[in-house]
Amino acid sequence: MRTVTIVTIATIKILKIYTTIQNRKI
Image (cartoon, rainbow, N blue to C red; front, top):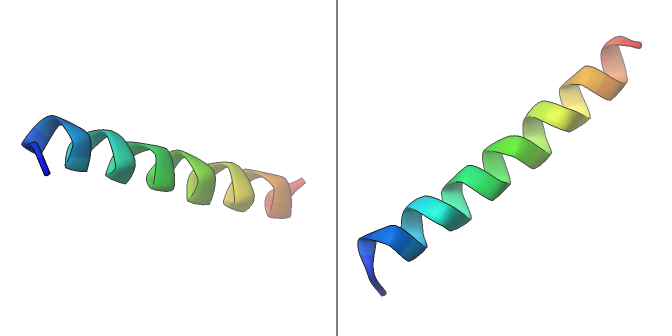
């Protein structure tokens, strides 16, 4: 896997986790 692909997947996962945390705060 290319580094770009790994970074992209990691970013998507982080965004999903961040969104989940924000939803829990509300």
